[in-house]
Image (tube, rainbow, N blue to C red; front, side, top):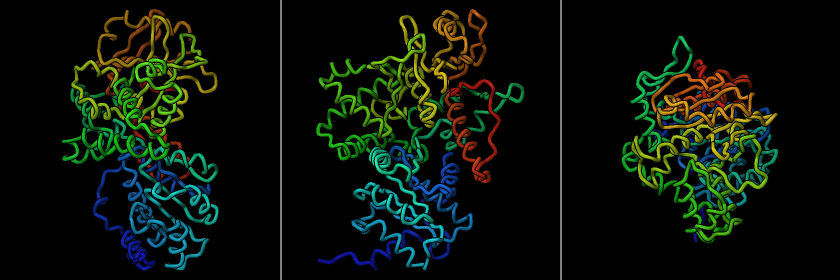
Length: 500
């Protein structure tokens, strides 16, 4: 039987790393590709070698992880890093099967006569194809402190689980979520035309709310995945692309393989139920009663779906901002609203589901910053409910409240704000109340005179996503790599942001 020879592996490595020859990447697939807003923060993390850790790039399927790796290589080469100091390989390539990670590293050192002290960058894509990859990677980090190791893979739940089990103190996770609405508008080249900063009020405004809403509907339908936005053929059949290439692969392959799930249809039914109810409150009791599955098993499944970045949960407080000791009810959200359209059909602007999808879209923006989600909840009591309440990180007292509506009625009928007045009376430290609308931008008042900011939902979703990405840039630029970031645009004063 013929065996794969070291010579064959070396030839394939040379093919996958064309920059070894002249320092220039020549793969046309990544030439001129649009850059995600996450590229600069990711490059900053890769370039900062002060902390001896491997970078684990996490995220749902098809959000552009492999693309961002190749764009990072292009930046490193442009920044003057010699091509022979960068190694990239995808472990799904059959010829690499069964080869230890250390062999690739030692091969690079030998091929170019590098010493262990020379700073190298080694990237392993699709790392989940290697059994016990986390053990091997941890050993490499300890053995080669001068090398910056980066790994990524499609099975997000597997990477997250193994990274946290075995990579404590050795791995740094970087989350690449689905597109924000702000990124979507940039990808379709409509951001400058539809959103601008008003020079007088310094707030975000739109010259054409109807056009912005049309793009928002399109974002809800297909806008979470770069390929569905940029590829015309994929966009024309986005439902099949999202369901077959993303949802089904996670539900039918990734999660069963990782967690040993036997009843795949049971898991699939649960996800379908949760996706249909995105933006709504669900209970373990109700789910168990309707499905015949025990609450313990349901809770496990929900945790699996969260680990795969398919859903997110938000917990409840009462009118006094108290958490429930036995939280059996919670709100569930898709992390990408376009997954619902793939399963149940694309919504029109006047569909009844638009309210829940608008709320899901806002949650999906906050999902980009786990630190914000830690202090985000919803309030519900007999007689009232508030969609999002941001708690102070130290005091756990409400700092701001956001009510999501796909209607202009709340801005015209003050009786629809009574629950907000009730909540505000109980929490005088509340600093900001935002109510989103369909088209109106205005400032109203509660009976006690406290201002309420009315803002179109599409503009609010855009603003939250943009603000969180700007905050990432500002935090990471503190490491001294300000050359990686464009100058942040001025922030609007009427933002529906979460204070933590």
